[in-house]
Image: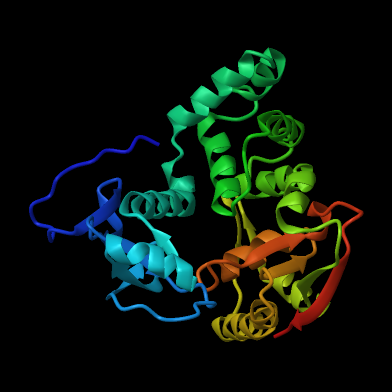
Length: 294
């Protein structure tokens, strides 16, 4: 995305803010004549400084001077200069909001690039089977869950296969995810060791599907609020087992339930990864350490 830098006299001397489409998303403070020192948990001796927080992940830190830098590093602190702090913060904000930064023009540019080597595929899909807006929604769905869209050939081929039977972009996204199982497996699972995950109670999966209502504009959940609250609580309890063990919070579901469970939980669990069994390569070994019930 295009990044614009502007002065703002309303800000404090050391303050900066990050906006997307004119709306403030995040902020931070920088002391340009200092370095930020963070304790990774293995510091041998503490050093004095100005208390602060690292802006990207809100970790406690201190500002130290140039003369303290070498000593802080020798004590075990992670020391970062101001430009790197801002760059990391900006990168994290972009990563978190990349889906809303994708525009129709970006999609058109992707289609144009694809035509250079896959003219037939591009012509088959756009605009005969799908509009740019529909493709945009599918790509945004993928990006929103951290799935790379670099493999456009696979993505577009899958859309060309299934678009004749449905124009529900959420359903099409699920088909694309299954076609990208190798990329998803590489991102979240190891082929060298068993991956710990949390699963859904089959009875809960059935309850979720029973609450799905189909309309001309797509499907949505009609789950009872109290039941939803119970599911969220159970998800929190079970995934904490993974979090406490320092492992990624991964929930495995059946393919038909995945997108509904993700929508149900996405506002409560920022880092929760929801994967269906059809999105995992056969050689991946999984071990369930908990089951979400309601």
